[in-house]
Image (tube, rainbow, N blue to C red; front, side, top):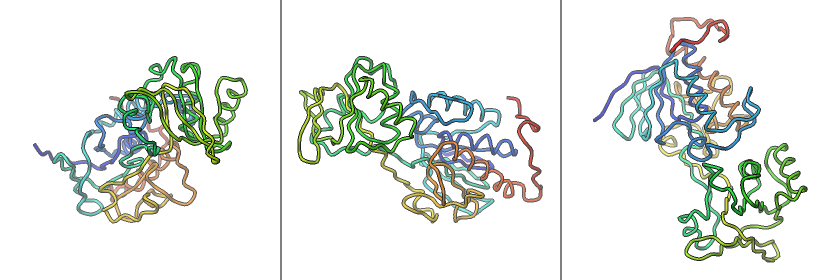
Length: 338
């Protein structure tokens, strides 16, 4: 049964940045409805790595992704957001101040502005091109995410990749997995310097094995049960790493889906925005978080948080065109009680 709703802002994406957009809008007396294709809030933090430690959230020296989502939800709750989960925005009609958003379940939402906070859009892992990998994926011998660290206690784990996700899980599974082997094609990593330093300390202490310069070459086992990961260097020399689990972290495959058809200016599958306002090329539509780009853009959650504030202050003029905005700090304005 179709439903029709009225609100100030439709936020597309219920990840951490989308959740913080609710707070920033609420502080300016604007209400939000949030649409997400997943059946739970949190985006990648919930779907891919709920126990992943995050180190660059101000005020939290370390916080697990799942806990961060819980805190952001608590921060948004006083502003009574309405969530439309397990559905996708398939059409946007109208103009700034009078948009109609339609979803795949028949829901219609009339709003004055739209904020795209869709992270990577529809996402999925980049799979290594290994023969027969599907059988190991089905049995759990190959996985692209870690939802519960404790499930890997005592296992021999091969982690492939040289970015932040790979090194985050080297550190996250240390002390839980029986053995951790890191496969990378070179002895240089693209992760945060502190993570690299901590991993190198574990390698020096003999607690993590660094397998470089090698690449994944094959998988061995019976009936989908992984027994070893075969790696090879550029000269074709092979090694067999006895393992119970392979975690390949080669990034996510991004697909914008219907967003790509909305006429927004795009650059390499990202939405270009004005960094001063988070406005896209279409009046009334804004973009925040990893899905946007502009000169100097950093793909950090904290950058996305800042972008939501910029968007909210610009959207205020659409929602309250005859009411000047008097800037106030949260410490003086306060937050509404539940």
